[in-house]
Length: 373
Image (cartoon, rainbow, N blue to C red; front, side, top):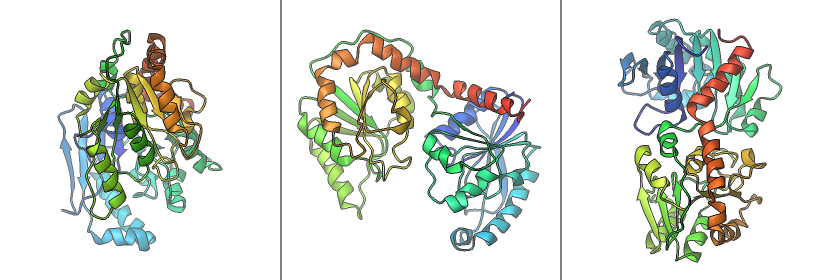
């Protein structure tokens, strides 16, 4: 089972204070008694290999470096890049104990995951893939593939590798904040929140601005990165509009602990993507579980992974042309949408998708294929 194993977790992101799925999986696996080695992306500061402990028991960071010119090879002479990376992988493996599991969230850097010599190899992309000629290669070298949406898993159809849908996970901070569902009481002014990077291209800025400007009686809070860019006037106009609206506040980055406490104070949440530009093609979003953990209603653009659900208010149009109408409908019946029965249903769904539960599911899938014992 997934305990007492040596696990290499390969991440496209560094280890830092902003935990996302890879960090949460690493923490959860280490808490189950596994020795987890978190392999960061390569740096250009040194060419050596280092393994350092963290403040978390059983969790170590693995760092390594490559020259800057490797990046040019990666995009123009991939065969040579792969050859040089083979040598680097051998160096990494020499510094590690024998691996029971190689678990990769990285779709671009490593062509053959078998080179890490794990007894079991997992490929786990959580964002939509766009360079399939290259990104299918690590999938072909895996024993099993997991992802957060069906449209990602469909990219691997025809391979002789089993694929399974495992939803995004909910972190413990939001689970703790959802411990008790109380009767909803509407205040004098409603407040809605959005969390996430406000600078991404996939955000449906027009829908968000329209909702804010059409409802001066409602307060809107935006949590997350909101830095202007000198070469992006459309983004800057969007951020200026939010800043200038008297009922809108760009809060900026807030720690997950603080965010989970603030979420329960809001009446509802917004999620609005342009599917053709969004990183996951508008199929799923990790922030949705955090919203649902509050119990409050969510007004969202279309998310294909939830098209058969009744947990939140969702547009059925890919262009979000009905988003403003749906928001109006929601606030007019906010007490109904935030009834205790509906809030309990949302909270229960979110808690069922804890990282602990996701690992239990993965454990069952691995066991069914004889990939762990």
